[in-house]
Image (cartoon, rainbow, N blue to C red):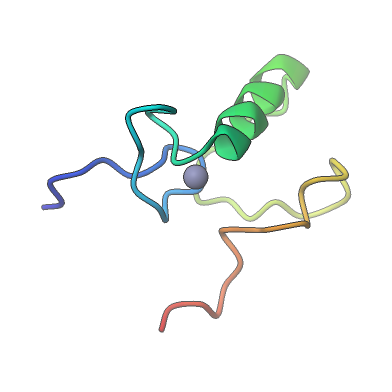
Length: 67
Ligand SMILES: [Zn+2]
């Protein structure tokens, strides 16, 4: 079991104290934006479709990055 919590948004990077429970301000704002827009999804679901201009900039959940 990991001793550190993962970012609740991208779930790939460790959360940092400054932005906890997120890994960065980017994830924090992205997650907040989803809540405010009423478009929040269950973590793990791939974000498909044009939902925001920043969505495709650095998709942390993109597959094929396992190794
Ligand atoms: Zn993150």
